Length: 148
Image (cartoon, rainbow, N blue to C red; front, side, top):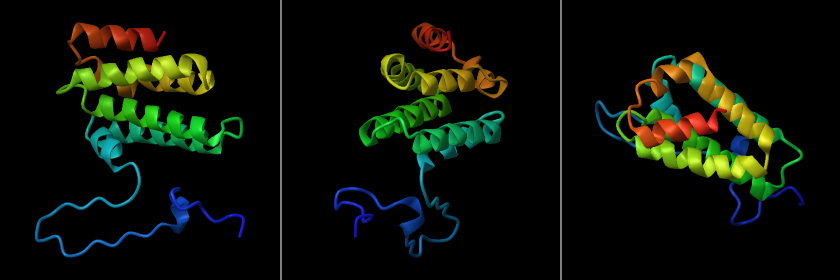
């Protein structure tokens, strides 16, 4: 069976299953992939538009035949880190700053087209509504450097 995932590799999304037991009255439960960043992004101004943009980019990365498995995984991780940093930018601007510095270094030399697409998301009106609220100078500089 050549298409079976290796033991340390996750199953493809369509083959995964989740079981959630009784979590109690009034509890919120999120099930699936990318819960951390997508839940946070949805709470931002124009969060649905941002979620769609990040999902489209992650889909593009997943389908990019020019990327090997390791580069694809790193590109996905760095994109998700920027999304999570954006979701938490008001309270934790350093998280966004570090994610942008890391992603900038990676996308500056590998998968530059994906880096440009990530920069386009950050330049979008939807993202600018959140980015405009960031007052911490070092994070503002990291944002400006990334979206050039």
